[in-house]
Length: 124
Image 1 (cartoon, helix red, strand yellow):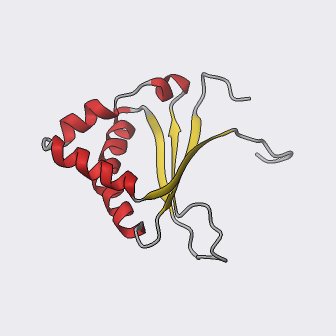
Image 2 (spheres, helix red, strand yellow):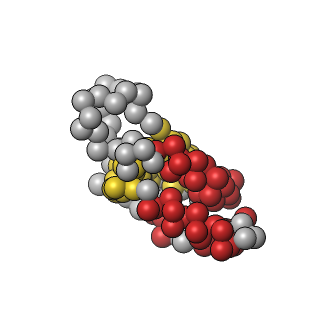
């Protein structure tokens, strides 16, 4: 079990509605990435990355967009500064809130998974 003093990585999975993927990613890039980037620069996050599956596979994929955030520690997870940062970064709060409502309306599913490190025997 992860102690509360070290870094913590969480994977955030999104499944968009059919045909809505590009719009969702565009809204994410425009409205959410600047907030994540701000927290990365402030040291709350140690790393942020986004991934897409390369292939559609057999059509049973549970997710089509994933963001992983490595937080400084558990205290950084408990800090909630997104709204404050959004007010600073997006002067047109009405448009920002409408874009965020739209972004989440494009989802069929969203879930977060806290990842526990597992050291492999003999790995360095």
